[in-house]
Length: 465
Ligand SMILES: [Mg+2]
Image (cartoon, rainbow, N blue to C red; front, side):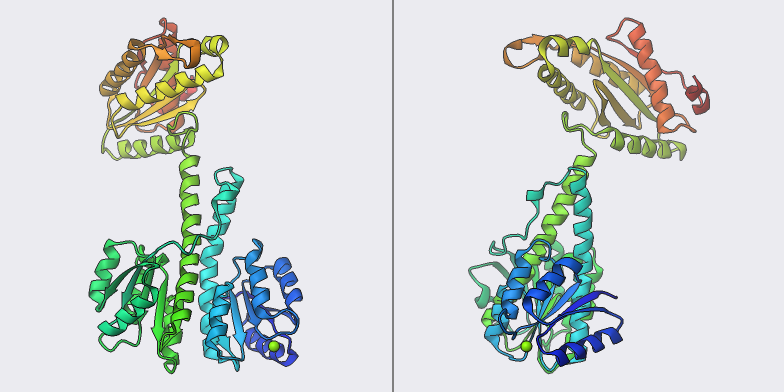
């Protein structure tokens, strides 16, 4: 996986060394020799990853990281702090200002590339989400206020997998109070728990004697549900090979044993923050999908969604699975409603029609607002007879009860006319709708407030008229 990496260090030989190592692995390398320059380059070039020296004159790495994470333009770029001091307090402080990971000088190549690969992979996922989010925003389906880094202090569901009961309890005690913790001492039980409950984080001891934690991690990553759940692995510092393999399998973060309470809670916080950010993005995408297939005024499906469902119904029909019909209904004399009582009253009528439509159709029918005061219902499984009965039921339900216009307007009676067409092999969604539309005009011509059916016709002949 290639990527663009920004190396920040005030010591020129350090920069040269890292640049050489990274370029040898075909990464595209940018460099900066102080904090302000790093921030400027990060904003301009938006690298995929930043390797940031902690000890720098004037503006140190913590300050640089704080500023990068405060800025929406650079917030999403993973930052790895590079420190000569292997001090616990520095790690915690780094995590608190939003650093994603640490490397100690002198930098170990294997550790470096494992971290880089793991963070670039994570960023790839985030970038895709951000990109889809941006297009959702362009469509007006996502608002600016909807996405932000989530509140990482809210309690999360955390599963701890540790074969030693006492160690597990000690780990849990470091987080207790802040989160809902579940302890397990064997991978089979853990897998079962994961399949039943949505956890926000898995903490797994890879140094356990009783089981192979890596195997479980690999299985979780190959599963659809587990693919996005963060995994924090505990490893022995001397087991470098396991650290590298864990990161390559897709473990999000590793924590060296013995576990320091502050570093543990800081790393948990970082993972939860990322998870919540990704969750927010995914939710807003679901939302934008929902909005892209829904008519805002009535809550019915929109035209785009309807066309796809007609095509589905046609496919089933052509495979001989079941018949299908389509209905078009149009409100009689709708313009005078708008003219006399205003558009709000007109909107109320359309909303009430949508409700009666839903109440009178089967659950599998797909009711859509076709535009203006026209509605379409796709009826999978319904032949012409069944569809005509449904249309008549709908017509009666509209006619039989007056429509409330809201405010001081009182109520008025409303009727609809409808055309029904049974689909035939060779139809397209256009040709089926054209035949239903012709039947609708026949209903209008017959004096309105009635239902007419279209003749079954091959698609070619129907579209020609
Ligand atoms: Mg330095």
